[in-house]
Length: 370
Image 1 (spheres, helix red, strand yellow):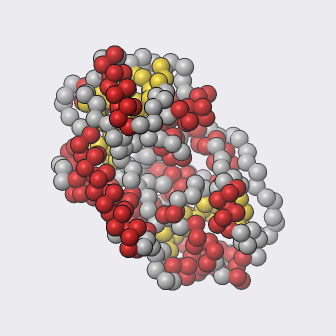
Image 2: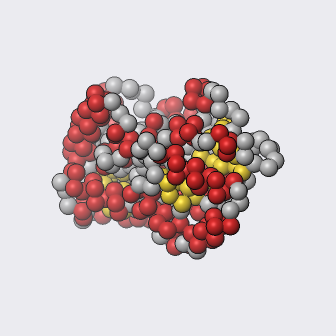
Image 3: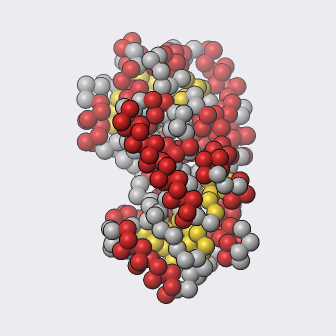
């Protein structure tokens, strides 16, 4: 037997990756997988898990007690490989262990996000990164990442050979592609509509939206997908042009992309962002922070603006000016970038190919050939 461990997947992208992989594996009628799912997450995604799987929901919060329980599960089911969707999981099973990695704070310490921290916070983050690096190196037999840039950085940081890390690109989920559910969008005529679809984290750089110049605010709407509490904390006084949709399901996302004019992604840190490729899939202009992780995925397909310095809003404001004025130069530049959209999409694995690659690594580990 094999285990797919999603205990570290709590929200957002991690859950999407987990559900996509298990649904693709279920199509192949595999009966040799057990799922480990967090109890709070399980109540929300129970209906999305194929009935073919046995699901185990550990009730232990203490890591040591939980790990003893997980070790018993491994022994009981004679498990030969554990696939932890994303780590670190702070558990070294007695069998082979494939661990997914998507922690941008660990590999992009040159990011503006670090410079925005206080000296004490930066020191704490660096020490925590050292600890997590040691944990991931200890607990994993093989690591999978989503981009070549992350692979090169992680191999260097962990001082391991690149052959011990596999690149399996993220993808556009079938739930997104086939999504037909509609989400509520305020119908405000005459304004250019932008979307930033993300939960809140400090490195997502939502605050840059408050630096948009007054003269553009009456001509635009920026839709965000935050909890009501977080939205009120961040954007009280900015409700005239920053609108909150609230958290949305994956099946609602395509509708949102199709009903706005452009996508903004100002993040300081990402290993991979589905925003990029989903916007490209829907044929929308894409405005993103000019940082290595973004260029590594979007290449020539996006409009880039600088972030992380005292003038970080200037580039964004210049792009907004071109879009708001329906500037001919912008349309020409967008058409140039749109020619690269097929190349970006072609570089992605499909959901099936991604699951097949994961399965291949699992089988190689089971036979001790990785």
